[in-house]
Image (tube, rainbow, N blue to C red; front, side, top):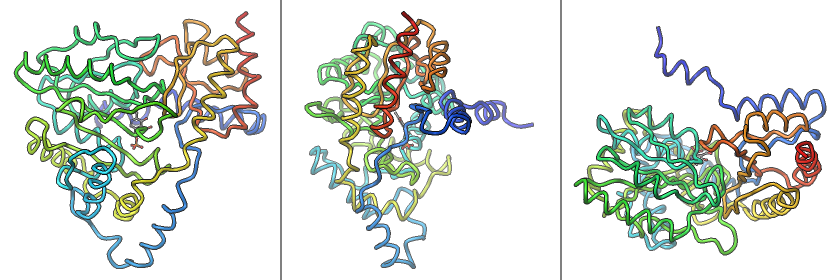
Length: 393
Ligand code: PLP
């Protein structure tokens, strides 16, 4: 006998992975240059040279210690460098003791959900959303409450949100810039969200935590502000990752930041650390703790994402697709050309376009394009998008 839930999670492949595998099979038949795979969110730009040079230098200089265990919550000097960076950039008021180093944002989120959850707790998530939230929240023994999307701009449907908050609401998850919509929440949206949370926390007599999942924080386009949430709402916990900003998804490095001012900060931090222990996540990779902490003020060369975005948005709109304006990340979330997004994604395959249906992100009637790909592939794919649109005329 094995755990049924884990069995299900381990055997069911995600729609995204299905598409990716299909793409590989199709490439073997028609050639890789004829398959337009927009399924996966793997950064397409290399990590900065400084990352590789720093890794090599550390390996040469510290071969005896670099592979050793660090403190469970991460090396103290590393946490100090991350804190200094947050203070320089956001005037965060962060100290090394507020940071818990993790193996990426996925682990950061799991530590926070597991650290916070008491029996009966609920976490609110806004559609469209990163589907793993459901896995992480339910894995922590909590319930995910999904707010339907506001489909014009993918900001927040506040009426639905207010109606969903209950005395059991332990936290609310935001992800801006967003996967899958690419949309950045405006300051106005965030201030309204904060006002509602403050009011409800007072009404229910306990804090409602805002969990800010920020792997795309640095991928914001010209003129778009990604507000620093702890300045807008006191009880914000930040989950960060270097997977996208430094193009290091395989190195598994991120952190949880529990600002000292959040309600019960010491207990929350200790519970996050306890969750890391319970989940077996202690001691994120030692080499990349050092490397990211020495490179945390830089990013990979991210400008290609904005170029890709503009090319796609302009071209798709001209072809008649409805696309909400993204402000960052590397995803677009247009409306599918028929209400059934799964049928639409199937039809796109006939044109060798691999597009992820929106249903899995909680927003049926849409599809996701991950444009973290070579610009040349996008140019070659445009006639296919046109042919797909024409097939509906
Ligand atoms: N959160 C969102 C919104 C993501 O898109 C991803 C990865 O794509 C993650 C979290 C997990 O990131 P990491 O690779 O740092 O675990």
